[in-house]
Length: 147
Image (cartoon, rainbow, N blue to C red; front, side):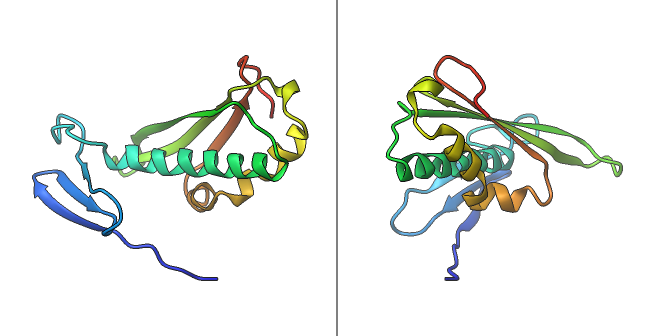
């Protein structure tokens, strides 16, 4: 079941680019952070983090739904460590993701099975992981790590 996804990025001004997702979705203005850009929109690094965090959150939600479980909401924070490589070029060195469930772990049936299967279904993180290490932690509503 192969399908394609396409976007168009058009320069607006200096480092500002309009990201067009197609007719059905609103456009997004991306910009590099100061001092390079003006910071008027998310940077490419922000967009990468958003894609990873959203995909992992969606995969976890899907796994919860398979077991008919309500986590009481999902909040995900993704953080990239960016530094210079051997050629002195900025690179995303790694990404750390923390997913927090709204309920306590004891309130969610089959949580161990849910946690064991959600990550492999995330298209984005599994693809990005080939080039950038990604660590994932899941916490319950009390902040207790459950994976």
